[in-house]
Amino acid sequence: MFLGDQLLPSLVLALGAAMFVGNGLALVRPPQHRRDGELERAPVARSVTMAAVGLVAAVWALASLLA
Image (cartoon, rainbow, N blue to C red; front, side, top):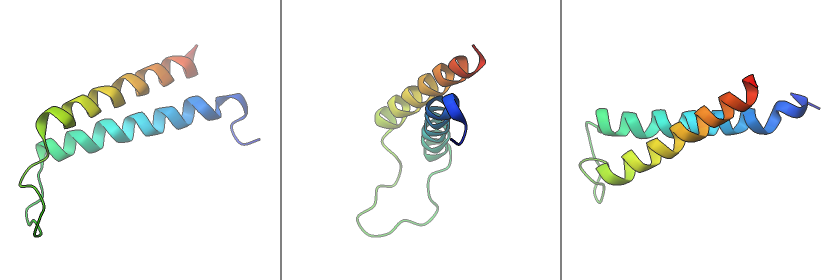
């Protein structure tokens, strides 16, 4: 099996890191051109919350992989 026992922590690490980076970039660099019906900026509270959840998941998965 691919990655054996490390499959689930690896997937959680990838998902958590993607959540953290994606939401962080949405806050730092909003889109230059927006389409009709799109927000000017990402909602700050939701983006910070989701980035924090992603960071916790990534750190937890990394600790699981290293332990």
